[in-house]
Length: 108
Picture 1 (cartoon, rainbow, N blue to C red):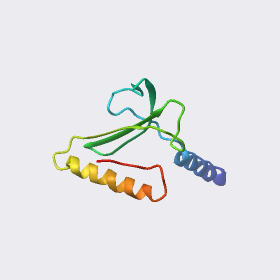
Picture 2: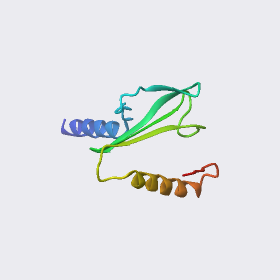
Picture 3: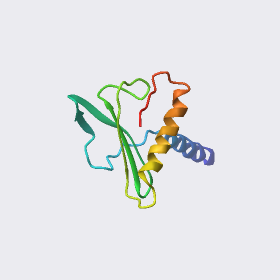
Picture 4: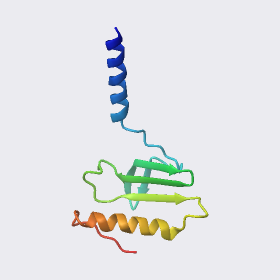
């Protein structure tokens, strides 16, 4: 009986670890947005620290594995983290991505 209990706990732990997190509209702007006559759906969000939020929308029907456009909103309420901090972080991320993604481009 003890083995069954331990097995159930392990199964539940694995299921929780692989469960997809719910996408939360932290910014309260909508899980669906319309931009340039195209509908975008909220696909990813992050709230890693108290004063920072990040949300990303993809065109309806597209996934992160294969997409042509993305709407991304980063919002900070911090007085210590500057816009330059976030721009530099995004540039660094995209410069790294350019090494393996020939379509990746940026202009600041």
